[in-house]
Image (cartoon, rainbow, N blue to C red; front, side, top):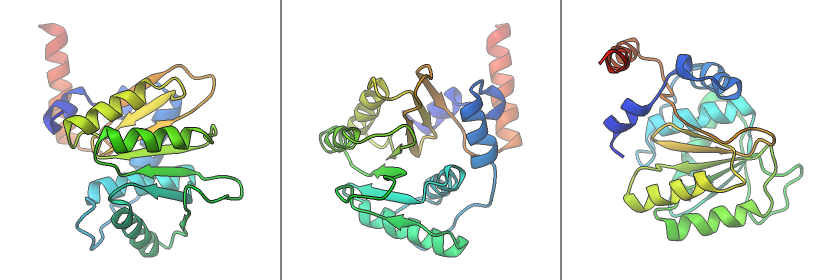
Length: 201
């Protein structure tokens, strides 16, 4: 999926009818400043969205896995230092008091992503959040993302293009959202006019 295709599918807070996701967008994504770091291997947009998600859910106990795990760990560590936020990093195999809050998967294709995802599912709890980085980077990665969305354990996914957020909320109907994690009056206006034109056409 190209970024333009994502934008045409995406919504802002006003197009979201799930209270849980609405709160994430308005109190998480729209709250606080952008995070800028020196590590160029992780985009500032992805890191900002991830860090706002961490703070919104107070998900301070993290495990980061995959080929790009080192770069992502250092990026989050630097962001934490700049914002004076304490983040704890754990091995996914370690016994963590109270369990992990968030697991970030940085794999490049479904043959590495899905085994990690399935392994993490063995100990998943309702409070856990999984994050897939760059779910639209390649067709193979998109295939993994689609498989994750269809998993019966997954109830809610939020696609911000740079990140795929995965939730396991019991008792909630399965829903998938394409969300723009930032406010842009001009973009909202253009997409709003397009959607209105589509309804009138």
